[in-house]
Image (cartoon, rainbow, N blue to C red; front, side, top):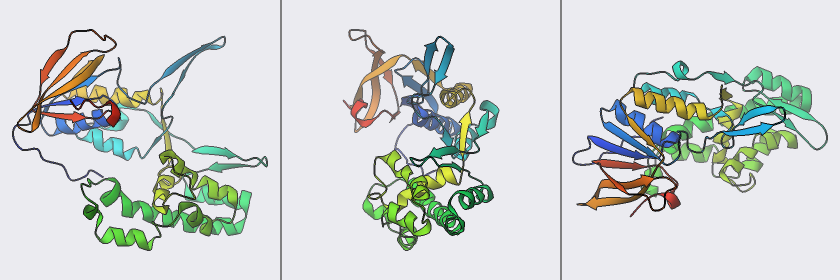
Length: 306
């Protein structure tokens, strides 16, 4: 689902990527695959960004907990990233497909398992909610799949610099699918049972929008976990970041952990160097790192823009 690549005029042999989370590491691997020399600066002592790990020490032992993302969807995107440097995700990660993907519990004491397999999920819906909902589930699954096909290329995986970039045949297809209506009511058209409505619409909360207010286009998130499946990397989600970092290092990247970027230097309308220091040392000495181009992946409020 790679977007059309952007181009930067002039020399771009040496690229510095700020942030060794999933975004920064993915960018680094694509740059390495394109023949660039890449340096990553990460303020934490390890890769992974928000995909961290918390070690809980209890009287029963020490347990590793994922405090950020806990499961992985659409692992084919990882294959695309590793493929940029001639590797495969399964060579560095042990991904386990979860079945059920998750188990939902409701206030009335009922439980519904969520399966990515169509036949298994239809049987679960028929068992717990009845034949009308089972028929609705089949139609909902087809709708979610079509929604994904329309959105993934020209909306999710594309660069948009202007609202005009959204114009095209897929915008009309999305409108015909009801993508500009509301997600909650749209899902309710397929599924009479309120429990199922919640199962297939709560995903808009990932983006901070209640289902009754979210555009139906957000249903594509429900596709990602209820149709495409849910996976878990053995060792926890930080293993994904570590695997990406290991692949980047093997491909020639230099990764410096414990470095906080404090500012950028510009000349002729482009960034020419970064200033950075050891993380956690407010009065630590600042170093300068020249660059032909810079990729910033921190959250915008934390991005060094000056």
